[in-house]
Image 1 (cartoon, rainbow, N blue to C red):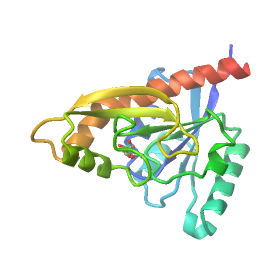
Image 2: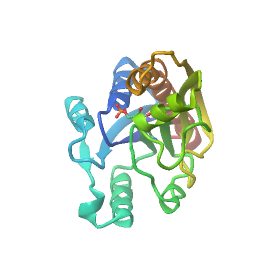
Image 3: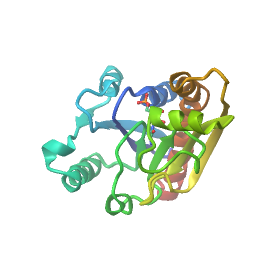
Image 4: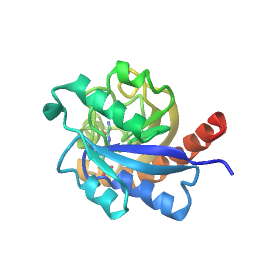
Length: 205
Ligand code: GAR
């Protein structure tokens, strides 16, 4: 039997997408990969508690403490190497990785973004801000996108998308919740399984 892809999940906040991945793993929806490490760039991220509860090792890397982005990425690369990571999943990781870093992991980093790319994406578009802008613009349909990560923020090849209808009485908060529930929490685990499967086949893991 083929071995599983070793997955690191990068987080910054609440970690509901991490929770969806953990649940998918428990239920066997995610079976070609295994989450072996959760890395946070925020000390207070609740996602860390979720990982601990699930028995997954965690690591907190703080850019300021480490002395800047280059030092942060160096420490991250070392952790990935040490844990023999095959796939990195950005699940609510609200910081941009440099082209230097992403070019070292072609098609091995995926990200979930809470809009239908190419709308409301790129530098500065993250979290609730994305939904605020979607409502301000007046779009009637939004959604979520999972894509490979390259040197262009939110610009890598699209893996999967799911549309969600905007309601007239939506606030950024209600829209964010619905996009998470109807799109993100399904899309990310499904994409994680698909990419893990590809990696295990490609590498003969
Ligand atoms: C999610 O909506 C995710 O798509 C978004 O941040 C939220 C994190 O929630 N990510 C981005 O905006 C990336 N540009 P979570 O911590 O509960 O998963």
